[in-house]
Image (tube, rainbow, N blue to C red):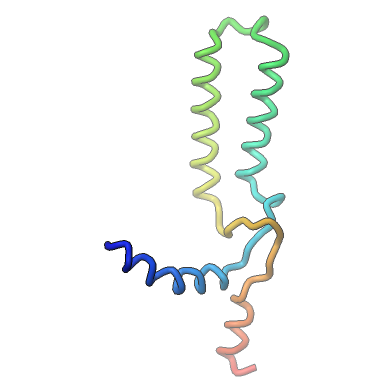
Amino acid sequence: MRLLELVRLLPRVSEAVAGLQVKGWYLSKTIWANLLALAGSIAYAVTGNDALTLTEDEVAALAVAGVAAANIVLRILTRKPVGLRSVPGAAGRADESASGR
């Protein structure tokens, strides 16, 4: 596709997204999983590697693999887009207009 064709599609995409029900970021399992991974990474950096027999590179590789796997699973389970705050969807309004209310 050419760039101009993509630009012409933006209003349609914007309208479609506006009709979606959006959940607040604090309800996102993906964000919470990543925050836990971040907290674990910070805790590991602060406490050190004394209790583990793994090298720092091995720990980093395992952490990245774990977060990637968790993100894939959570992406599959995701049903709604995430926003800064919860926004009621237009789906209910569309149903009402279709039934003649």
